[in-house]
Length: 249
Ligand code: SF4
Image (cartoon, rainbow, N blue to C red; front, top):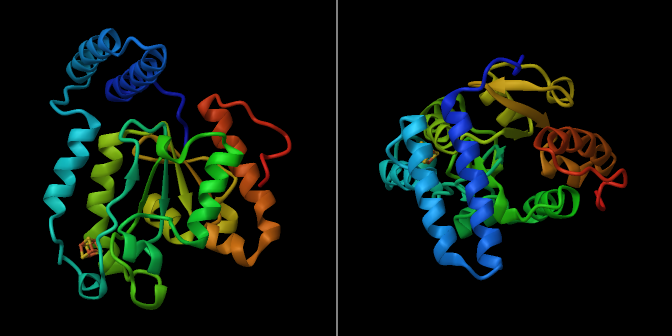
């Protein structure tokens, strides 16, 4: 549970790469992309050397996607329209992990684009004041379970290694586990989500904040208050300014 030990070199390298990317964006806004790009390239080279990784997170994610291929490792392949691999910034500081694609996600191949997805986008954009494109969003399973049922243990076991690789590639500062299925898979526990949420946990040294799934919030609006409390803890951890009002959440 503790995250106070010395941070691993690759975590520091990921932070360095993120900081440089943010600087590049600022420089590009100021109109000197050539200079910033050269600085970014040099810094990424140093970061890769420091972390011992040959590829940057974006390249790693592309490699993982290639390895996944037209996956038929579990029975969920039969009913899917699209594999929903994940979406967002390979250098994201925060990663949201849900359960699995629903109907809209299956149709579009993008996570969290239906009603619950719009609520998650509001949490990110109105609550955290981040752009959705600045975070990374993925699921425990990448193909839609029929009728939106919970994924079976064998399906999670087959798919989870790819999520693990995505997390390893991105090395976010924080993971937000959305709902019971995501929290249980990441934390390897069966504790009810109502008891997990609100407290920090860890996945391979990365702080994890479990909270309620946005689809639960659609049915239980009163739980938005608890989710906002959890998200505020995430924002504090990331050094983001927290407004007491909660940005509309
Ligand atoms: S859910 Fe995961 S393991 Fe199963 S077929 Fe889809 S991509 Fe492959």
